[in-house]
Figure 1: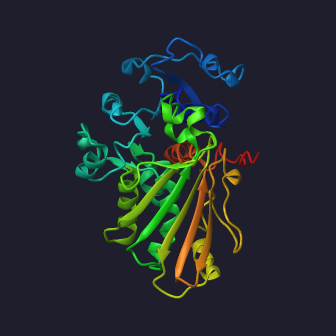
Figure 2 (figure 1 turned 45 degrees about the vertical axis):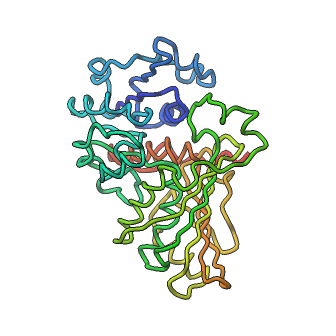
Figure 3 (figure 1 turned 180 degrees about the horizontal axis):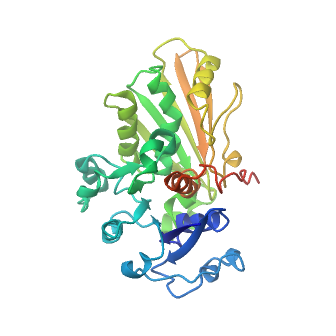
Length: 346
C-alpha cells in the first residue's frame, strides 16, 4: 500500500479525494490536514463518512506529517501553497497541487492574471501540468504536479484534436462554459448562497477569468503558435457538473462524422475520454460523480464552423478524481484504479 496525505481535506475538493481514496485498492490515506477542523474526526465534519473513514484531522505541522506519506495532495487556496509546498519538496516529498500556482510556465502570465507575486518561481521548472492525456510521461516521475482547473480540462481536451490535426483556424475560438456551484469551493459568500443562485443562471468574470490564460497556454503548446480565446464562464444552479460549448471556424471541409472519427482515433487509448457518436451530445448527468469527460461534435455547414460540446464533473475530472488519476500514474498503478465507478446520473 502507498501512503498519501491530504492537506486541505475538508474543502469540497479535499473531501472528494478522501471519498475516492478511502476505497482505493492500493492507496492508504495516512493523514488528513485541516486548518478549520483540526482535532475533529473528519466524519464529524462530513457525517456521510461515519464508520467509513473516521480519521482525526491534524493541524499543519510539516515536520510531523511529512513522515506519514509518500505523496501529498494539497487542496489549498491560490497563494497559500507557498507556505507548504517548498517545505514538502525540501523533505523529498512529491506533491499534487490544486492551486493555480504551478500551472504556468511564465511567471509574468501568472502574476498578471492572479494579480499577485508568485513567491515560488524556482519551482516552476520542476512542475508538470497534471493533464494525463497530454503529459502522462512527465507526470510519472514528477516531483510536483499542478492539477489543472476544471474549465481548462473541459476546454483543452475538447479542442486538442482540432489543433493537432490543423482542422480549425486559430483565430476567433469561442468557449462558453457553465459550472455547478461547487466550482467555487466550500464558499459562504453572498453570490453562492441558495437564494442568490437557485433559479438563476449568470455569467461572471466575462473576458477576464483567470482560467483563460491557462487554456491559452496549453492550446498554444498544442498549436505551436500563440492562441487567444474568448472565454465566458457561467454559474448553473446545480451542485456539480460542467458543460463547455466551443465554436471554431473550420480550416477545411469536414463533416461531423469525419471529425468524430479523428477524435476517436486521437483518444483511442484514453479510458476516461468518451467520444459520442454523431447525433448524440454530452449531458452533465452522464459524468457527474465520475472521472469521465464526454465530447460531442456538430458541424454547422452553413457557417463552416465546428461546435464541440464537452461535459465533466467539476469536482471529478475537473479536480479530485483527476488528481487520483495523476496519483495512479505517479505510483505506477493502472490509471483507472479506484476510478471505474459510473456517473451518479440521478
